[in-house]
Length: 475
Image 1 (cartoon, rainbow, N blue to C red):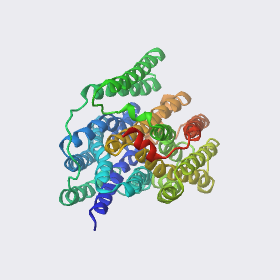
Image 2: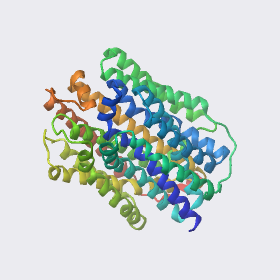
Image 3: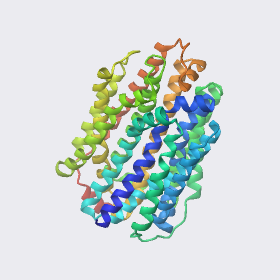
Image 4: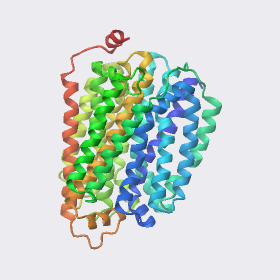
């Protein structure tokens, strides 16, 4: 096998494994919470910590890889992720699971930050976009396919098995990458952007603490707003700091490139729109009105993963021949229609009734992901593709985490905290707020549709331009 295909296969398998864990825990969340006697706040952070930690460290880990070797730190990520997965399976409390999920996230950040760079080194310019597109699709597919696998493992072997299943895969991947992957990239100088990373971490933690503590009424409304606004102001400071640093981890100058700018706006809004889909559908299907099992819930969500896996590679291939814009806009519009249909969910829906909206959402996501990723990567100078890939992945993980935080906030505004806790632990025998619970889901999905429409606008108004011209202009 040619080296480039070894690199693509290895990184795609390991990224698929890591992305499975972004959502696999969601389908098992009620059983995890009940078994560990986790509080509702702990339950929220079991979900949020993975994406938050990944977002905070991903860009710095990419810089470390440029300094010390991408394959070396990619291998380290596999070891850390595998060890974190094993520890998650031994958790005895909600706090322990949050800690071990954070260790998992550190490993995943090494994988996410280096896989695209390894592929960039292995493939030439003509094939690089296609390889990166396939790798990106594996992230999206993995995050949804984990639902079915998570449901099956949880109902068959218990929730701990959803973490232990990563151990043999991680060990195999680590041995394979250690023996087969090679350092093709040139190590660079520079240093880690500690200032920017600390400012980013402070801003994100402040925002998400405000969202979660505020939604559970642990903070007053004023305290909640102060924490969220303070966090957002810190994130604005982060952008300013990165614009002044000589060698930033988040190169804001790249946003001067039109296609890079519009593509990443689309990525970010799309991630916020779809990030909470799985959580909301899982809580709905296992919740007080539908009352399905973990496995049944996973099976209900198969149309999303199937259509995403089908349309992703096809749209990536077609976009190479016919251009990316029609597939980006078409994918966003298709998902928008699906979300608008979901805003009319009833308290009880059959699989057939849910089939059309879930197919539309999944197909739209698949159509959007690969062409948009290819357009973004082709728009930047060759020597900036590593940092560009890291920035795009950071926006995806950040958008997904924001989506989860907002969904917690919205549901908590509609459902009393005591009954919301019943939903999270899967015990809703005396639940009396079924209509309010479903209405809160309607609001979440309406917001998703609005964000998708907003993400279409930059692509529509973007002036026709060739990525090659932009590359030349900014080289």
